[in-house]
Length: 378
Image 1 (spheres, rainbow, N blue to C red):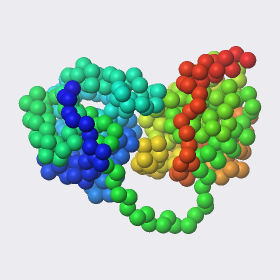
Image 2 (image 1 turned 180 degrees about the vertical axis):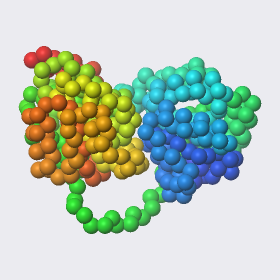
Image 3 (image 1 turned 90 degrees about the horizontal axis):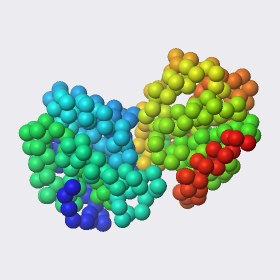
Image 4 (image 1 turned 180 degrees about the horizontal axis):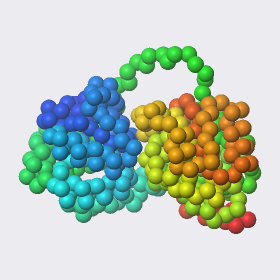
């Protein structure tokens, strides 16, 4: 890992970073958002939408990039370092084996000496070593545009010479915020609930004995703030895994089990729906809170707008699916799902947005897990 100087407080302009990459023939761009690289994604969406491909998970992004490289492009993969685990297989057995190089922009959440959330601690410690172990040359993203231009040229030369990927590690504050464009007022329509209200409707309608698993991000944080109880499990990190955790619980208890999922999380691990649908003996209530955005990382769009989750659930073997957008319909769907049994998918269309003062979880992750495990036995 190179020892670059500390990143300037203002950070590089996103337009400048994108411009330097495009001037050197890099593109298209694909990946999963992180707030550290949110400005770059915002710039791409606003100024070069044809060159940005929304990926559901980081491994998919690497594979898309590999295909683009084979087609003669110089693709760039954007990801949070927590998603490096999803990239290990395609980086080591696709890119390395076929010698198909891609450029990685990997953020450095949990960087030692920089306080962060618990799920980033371990990955933050091992990010540079993990890249090196995969034989991916890596260095800090330079904080000077002229130096960045030189390093991009060196990265391109390295990839051409070796056929191996190259990674720039992006620390917090390396990229300055991208100015928000004025939003065109949306056409008038029914006002959707926000996530916190939807969670309240779900908790009010469900069987009080329900074991409730909440996906990472603001979903778990709002559930803890407003409706904390021992029967809640707050998943921290491991995006996309909450529904599989809930299935594992449901297979080994007679109590009702539900999961609060998100659209981005569900898309990241869509294979979970195949397993849930196959295990017909469970009564898992799969609640998919869909705001069409990665809200925790800055509101970048997911691909959920074009996805028929109900059709996927039916194809996977769920007993029923529901598509709701208001409180009464949501409560009725929860009651019906728990009364009928079998796997039910409830897609809840919600508006983006949350309390700006929403805090981090008060309960440490190990305590949350231990309390939940004890609650199962009661």
